Length: 389
Image 1 (cartoon, one colour):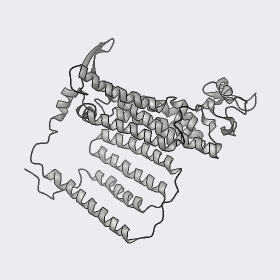
Image 2 (cartoon, rainbow, N blue to C red):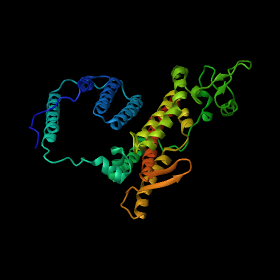
Image 3 (cartoon, rainbow, N blue to C red):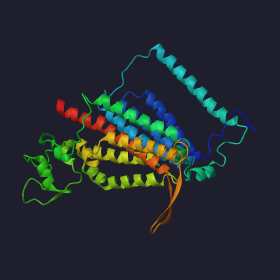
Image 4 (tube, rainbow, N blue to C red):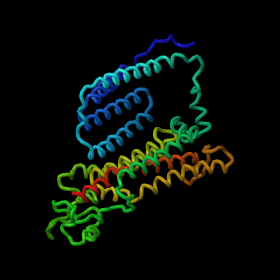
C-alpha cells in the first residue's frame, strides 16, 4: 500500500543536514551577489555539497561525476569571466523583480511538493527490484549506472556525446576571429617577445626553438656559462610572464599530471564493475589538461596533448557508432553488448564486454571537448591578448 501522503522522512542520517544547510545558504548568497566571480564560486559550493549528499546516500559514482563536472565548470566560468565586467549590472528594484521572485517561489514550492508526494503514491514493486542481478547477466558488469549508460540506454548516450561535439564546435566558432586555426603551439614555437624576463629558457637566443631543443627535456642553464644546471619543471613554463608564474604550482603539476592520467585510465577500464566509466575517466584526464594549462599557459597545453580536438571528437564518435554497427553485424540489436571470454597468457580467462569500446568512444569525446574549450576559451583568448596588446 502507498505511504500516507505528507509523511516525510527528513533525513537518513543527521550528517545529511549539513550539506543541505550549505546549499540553501549558498543559493541565497548567489542570488544576492553583485560580483560575478563570487557568484560562480558560491555556486560551486552548492555543487560540491550536492556531491556530499550523493556520498551520504551511497552513490559514489554520481558523487565522483558531480565533483569532476563542478570542477571543470568552475574553471570554464573563470576563463569566461576574464572577458566580462567584474560586477553584475546594478538595476533598480523595479516592480517586475518582485513578480519574478513570486513566480520563482511558486514554481519551487510546486516542484518540491511533487517530489514529496510522488514517491508516496507507489503501490507496486519498483521496476529496479532485482536490477543488479539482471544487469550483470545481460550487461556483464556490476556497476549499474555504467552498464545502463553503455548498454541499456546506450542510444541516449550516443545522442548526448553528439551534443557534446556540437557544443564544442559552437564554443570554438564564437572565439576564433576568422577561422579555426589548425596550428598547435608548442614551447619551441613561442616568440622571444613572450618569454619570461627572469632568466627564461632561451636566455635571449636568436633562435628560441633551437635553444630549447639544445636544452633537452627537464634541464636548463642560467644566463652565465658557469652556472649550475637548473630544473625545468614545465616545458613551456618560461613563456608565462613572471607575475603569472608559480614555482609551487609548476612543481605540483609535474608531480600529479601523469598520476591523474593513469587514474583516468583506471576509471575507464574499471568502470564496468567499479565507480568510473568513460565519462568520468575523460573528466579526470580533462582536469589534468586544465592543470597543465593553468600552470604553464597556452604553449604548455600544446606540450601536454599535441593533438587536434576535432580528431579526438571525431574518433570518439566514430568508435561509439562503430560499436553499434558491430553489434548489428553480430546479429544483435543496435548497441547491444556481447560478452567475450579471451584466454590471455599469465592472466588466464579474461572477460571482455564489447561495451568497453563504446566507453572508450565516450572517453575520447569528453577529452576532445575539454581540449577544445581550453584551446578556445583559454589559448585563443591568450593569443588574441598578445596580438592586440
